[in-house]
Length: 105
Image (tube, rainbow, N blue to C red; front, side):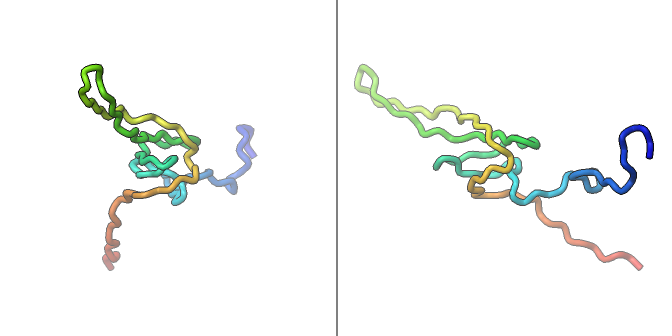
C-alpha cells in the first residue's frame, strides 16, 4: 500500500468507463424537452447535481390607454432543478446508432 491514500488496484474509478461518464438513462440530458408544472421547457445545461431548464412563458396581452390591443412574448424563464428530477421527458434526442462492422479476419 502506498502512502498517497490509495487502497490498491482493486478500487475502481467511480462512474468512469474508458474516460467517459457512464450513461444514465433516467437522468436529464442536454436538449431534452420536458414538462414542468404544465409548461414546456428545454434542458440547456446539466451538471452532477443540477439541471438548467428554459421554460416558455405564455404571451401577455393587454389594452393600452388608447384602446389598442398589444401582445408580446416574454423571454423564457430560467429554472434550476435536480439533474435526476422526476419530470416528464417529452422528446429525448439521442445520437443515431452506428452499425458495427464485423472484424476483418
